[in-house]
Length: 297
Image (cartoon, rainbow, N blue to C red; front, top):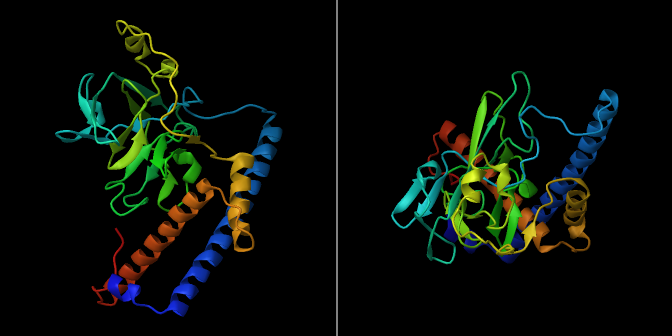
């Protein structure tokens, strides 16, 4: 099947490229409309309630530190291990291929107030299997919205690339509690969570957001210098930066002024559309007795 694609003629390839560009323009224009509508609705709702701050249903509404949801598998020299089973001193495999010991593990449990939804800062985001590339992640990955993945040489917060298809905000209002973890190594590093390159805790970061921060404060001889991220950080989960980014992508069909982040997001969303299309074809194929149709990751 893939070989047949490679042998298509030039005009066919150009047609597919044009279709992708058109779909990209439409997709980003819809995103622009959604961002504007959400901003107007949010403002109107706050004015109606006389509320000029933030609201939500979970204790601690601003959980800025990126974290992994309980159950996430982390790559170690002996294979993948569930994050809650790791302990200080255990080795993990970093993006460079080196094995590094865990210095500290931050834990945070949230409880939802009865009758109230989870705050958007707390509810996890799911990165579906193969959302990034083939078999990456190799299993659904659940992260807090501010957790960063290492993509194209940058640390991109997962909330910045939500697409509603392969990277989605989870509806977990049936759960009364959520537990998150993250790892701290001697330096800021990238490790593998469900096969996806994900950042660890910044050593000089604010550890008081975790329930067990006193353990971190009691580490002997800990004079952690000011640490810098291992790569540039991109965090544009909403508002004007996201609006400008979407507009650049929508207008790229006329003049391409997209940033590297814009291109990365567009590429992930193109892949999401291809996966959705392949799954629809597979579903139709099964109903029609055509098992030879392609199936997505």
